[in-house]
Picture 1 (cartoon, rainbow, N blue to C red):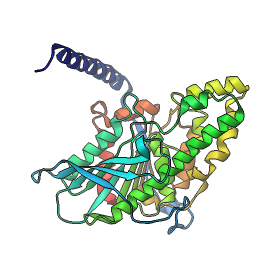
Picture 2 (picture 1 turned 30 degrees about the vertical axis):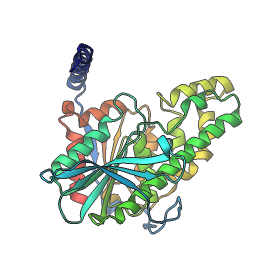
Picture 3 (picture 1 turned 45 degrees about the vertical axis):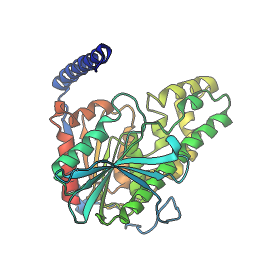
Length: 359
């Protein structure tokens, strides 16, 4: 029997959802949602270096990938089976048990099909799960079963920001930041291991594997794109190069501990950026030009982004070979409205059509 408390909570949740919807609707009406500058890929003016494919920047020992997989939903009348995948990480990745967990939507068609890997925005704050969940649903719906989707989960933030903010000495602070950089490197290698896993699957066409990341996972995916030559299509949404510069600029989870450190050590934001740059240099996509095919990359960013500096966006675009670029005329968070009903799901359609075209 359903209790009165349960019904009350459900009613309260629905009421809050309606209020949030009305707020977003008002914002969407005022701001537009989809106004942008489109820069197409122009191969005739592309100045990228010759591709340096065939090896990984972040080297690892390639071997068969151990995994566990269980069925969550199986219905031959549906387009996809729903499976739960677990793979051990190569190191400390900030998730429970140092596991890579994903929901694998496996097509019910008996032929080799492309795969799109959807990265999470690591963390469980309000709204962070929306972009990857919705794009996974969009790919599943519009592909009508001719595409597999691997939706990587990431409920926990990879960064221990409390420890960063409470560091009493510069050495302790740098040690905590080095741990964050190392976890990021582990995630980038783990993405390559997901490709290894996919290559061993009979139902996946290994020549047609795509990747998409949003916000903080777009920063990760940008480095994964230059590190991993096997991706046939990559979409980056509100990301950038220069992670040290982003951490010295972005507010929110990264900004609160930064403010404490600046006050405690008497640093400026420039001092903070300079101190952590060497820790993140090896995972900064801007340092590895000429390793991607720009005709197979789609880049979204935001002109008024207060989290990802404009030069970090521009440098990522340059190092990737000037791929197709869509720059919204809003801030970081507001630009995501273009993938909601308020923006007529415009970004979601653009992303699906890109993957359909390239894969």
